[in-house]
Length: 379
Image 1: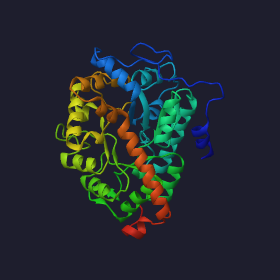
Image 2: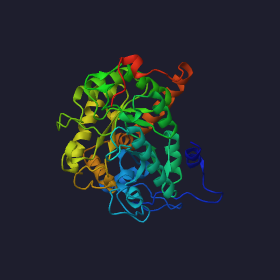
Image 3: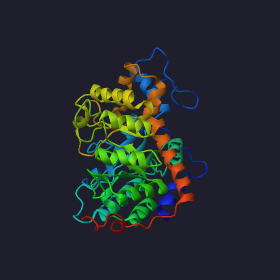
Image 4: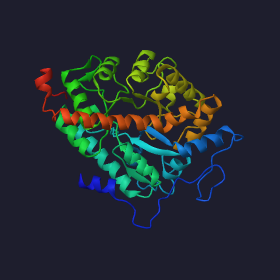
């Protein structure tokens, strides 16, 4: 924990200036920053200028897992073996990443240990590139990272199996920086929905400030979590089931419910879920915005996760092309600012506020699955 706090609070020495994202478009001003694109600029120039002010918060990136298979890597100079490195993050105007902690193939029966190893790996990558990456526990620290020219890294989503049916493990993972947990794949968050213990997990997540990720969860689990949670929920890799019937995509009724609950649907750049072209991704963004509202739509690159990506979106540098397509379709700049930056910031701030309120009202839960559900821990 002390190491994490050191990473979070260590600032550059006096006289050391932050390194801003390099300007990509427009004429530099006196401070060397890119000037806004004029009205005569094309959609791609406008997209880059808009992203310079409102960078992308990417809801699902698996870079640490992908780096495990490489004998050597240099993310600062560029790493062609993966879809994420610092030059392309800057080119794509990515301001923050949610790093997936799902292990590639963890040892059977050891999900907690496998997740701890993923956290250790993620933190080692951040330490290796202090001039490019910075850990973040919430919205304020994401803004701090951006102001110092770093890409903020939020740990999560992690699989719910990592808890091994223990709220104590949840608290330990939170103390190590976990901020997003996927509610799927356990006996207490299943096709039947949340059990009593599952509901206690959600309440404890609210108290801690850990966001619920409902991507891949059953419809019953999603419905109950939205009704129970005092903090907004995320779907870190869900598109519109009405356009493509992938099991991780959301039907319109759940999209509307997610929007009404203040949640966030982060549409993945994954061909299997959205389709093989950039226009297909834009179609899903259009649909989610129409059904759930402009405050409910976000972006999820799913890069380095093993997913195939639509053309022109194969790596994290592709975001300006997607934003240019949305501008061409008539999206107002205010909605694009919500899509890329504002909606994720709102959800993170709301989770922090809900946690502060809950901590005044509720002590850490000592409930056990055997007490609430009348069964032993799931294997």
